[in-house]
Amino acid sequence: MKSILLHIDHDTAMRARLHVALDIARATNGHITCLQAVSYDVFAPGDVYGSAIAVAMPVIKANAEQLRRQIETELEHEGAVWDWRFVYGIAAHRLLEASPLADVVILGPAEARADGHGASAVVGDVVMKASVPVLVVPESATSLDLSAPMLVAWNGSSEAAHALRAAVPLLACSCTVTLVNITQDREKGRADLPSTDGAKYLSRHGIDCEIVEIPRGEAHIADTLFSAAQMRECGLMVMGAYGHSRLAEMLLGGVTRRMLNAPQMPILLAH
Image 1 (cartoon, rainbow, N blue to C red):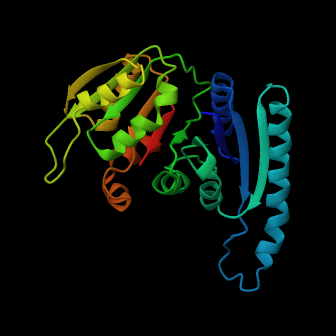
Image 2: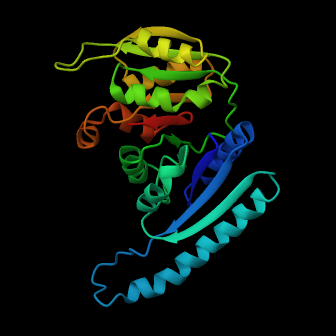
């Protein structure tokens, strides 16, 4: 992955995803594009004449410039190749505009809020609309060892196939790849791709993998996948995002939403 698009923001996972971006850049001799978007869409009830926006924007811009100085100072000592793009606008929109010539977009799981909780709408928007995979990095991730074991969450869907294909450059670096399928009743009208098809695809790229089937139990699928990954000491999980409509995921608490609410490791998503 030579072209790495890194979202710059004040959320609690910023430093974690910076380190992960640097790890990928070093391993692939890649280039990091740091994209910092500052939104001018400041909402204040009753602010008919925009006076609140006029007061808030200089403060927002000053904070953004301080963050830029901090990260640029760190990057100057890392020996990485990078450039910086400062833009105004909604982060998801600007990331989508910059994504067509990126190999991966690196985001945090939560929006820049004081509590840092809740899945980010930015992740959902970018995953659903970008033609490249999205790597979601939680605050707890201090690095990404590309030689460590990796897990592919496989459910036979086209989304899982897209994620598998997008992850090949990273999976090729791993010492062990495990393709995990949580067995459950098939949905009516859905044509599943068998796990063996995923394994055959990887083998054509010179990647061996182990196929593991885990019966669907009482635990949530997301928890089962995280447990399987932790048991194998995986450093990365690969999965298809939003197999149902995103609205259904939001309302019903689907697997993607559950995993993004409390990710336990970096997750590479594709839709």
